[in-house]
Length: 154
Image (cartoon, rainbow, N blue to C red; front, side, top):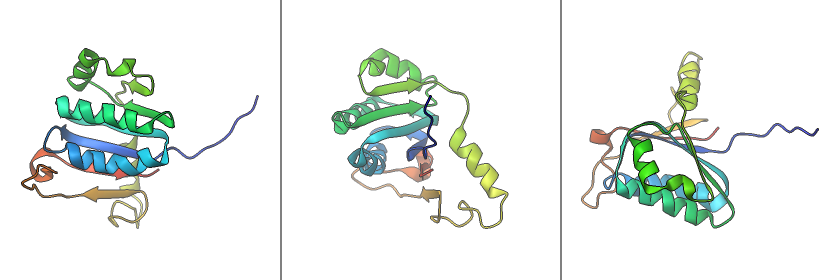
């Protein structure tokens, strides 16, 4: 047997709603990971709502990997799971849907909060950065109303 220890792939953790107003910002966060290829993790554990524009973003992300990797949708739960099932997202060859009740990224960050000089306390340094984006007229992001999006590079 051979065994290796590898670093987990960077993950985009979505919180709140993925819809027409937030789709572009989420896609912008995913873009560098898709360019890099390999395993791309999109954590949906704290996603409360997704509409068809969110599904379209996921399908475009998988297509953007173009045979260079897989998109793992972690923490998929109702009502988001029902929508993805209706659309048949799991039938796309390089999309893997993983329902899970555990919130691995935020649990890790809560533990980090207890440590002095944690990345979360020092916004933007280390493992965690939070985007607080204001709404704009082109629908790029309405974060103050719809929740937060967090980018975790673990």
